[in-house]
Length: 285
Ligand code: F3S
Image (cartoon, rainbow, N blue to C red; front, side, top):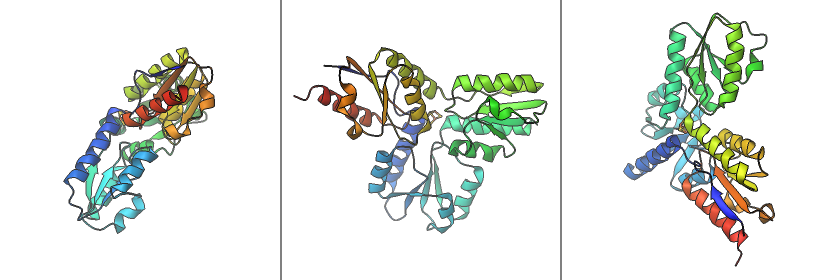
């Protein structure tokens, strides 16, 4: 019967735990007379979002802000937002509870500071990702660069200041910095990669090296979970699932060690459910 091991660092990070605790607090203090909403799904985790919906928390978009009843409360998620969204919410008479991760706030401050100091700001990150959109709100003339090749054909100015989407890999950042250093006279870097991500990636790789099969738990729309699955798949057959119910017993056939890891949006309870499911498949008695 296979052993099941969870990566040393896996699942919900500091920022997500903090956001979930903030919403719990808001709901506990709330008397039900006004609505509670999150601006976009609070985290990339359908089970958590459904659980919040059952408690009356609705997901709204930026366009809805103007039409919500005054006095309602809007929770901003860990990814952060552009500053104008907060202004708009307040102007519409809404209360704002800010669950922006402090590490994301650091990126905002770094981007703003570099822009103020006259650098061409470069955000190493995924174009269109909400975190990157939020960063751009603090440095509107910044470039978003996904990889070193995105710099091809760009007229790079002398002074470039770089900030990084928190979930980016160090290897990609290094490649962009190497390319920029050959094009600009000064490259100032604020390495704002979040360690929660790299620690989870390192722990996932260490486990995947030893495991016969890896199961990665987390939203399919979660970039950091997808990245974990990618890393694991270089060492072992890997399956990315959103919940224990998606587990296929065939994956575990002949495995001596089943490795489990989970993205930053996966609460510990969901990891425990998956481990229990794997154990019951492995030992159906
Ligand atoms: Fe914050 Fe890092 Fe999590 S930036 S939301 S602690 S992945």
